[in-house]
Length: 210
Image 1 (tube, rainbow, N blue to C red):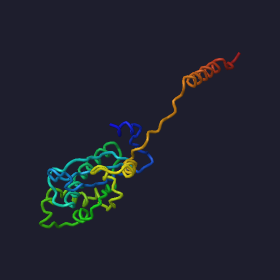
Image 2: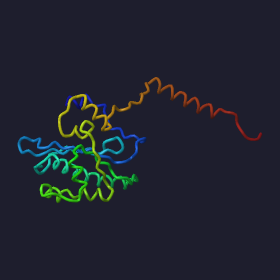
Image 3: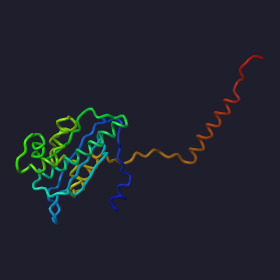
């Protein structure tokens, strides 16, 4: 509650100057729940530099490795991207370029780029083959992102204040621009000017023949 009160002036700012291209940051906290050892998925999809969709939720299955947890998270993010692409197409903002998915797990990227699967990864390959198909269709593209630059970090684990504030800015969360509010005297002055201008037009020189 204290955080909500302290940040009440913060708003997501979607700028018309930014390119309207989808990009996504994906992270997973592997086996973070000490009760059942399930991992947490965190991803944020941005349009340009502003977050338009995000999630932070426990995965439904137990991942056997950090790579598996990240791969499951990436496949969940892909489904969100597919829905957003269709929505943007409906409102006249078609996505002609592949959406970049930033991932800080090199093993996850290699797994998505290979066409083969080992016995260790066969079970997640069946569940999450969507990611490879979308890559082959040119709808998404995976790129490595260093962990210190991973925006989705904010959705999977508690962070210190400096890093937390830095990541909220990268989500597009900024202080709302407040337009000056005219005082009662200023409003009366504007009204008097408008009335005076109207009277002058009415009392101007007549036109026409005598």
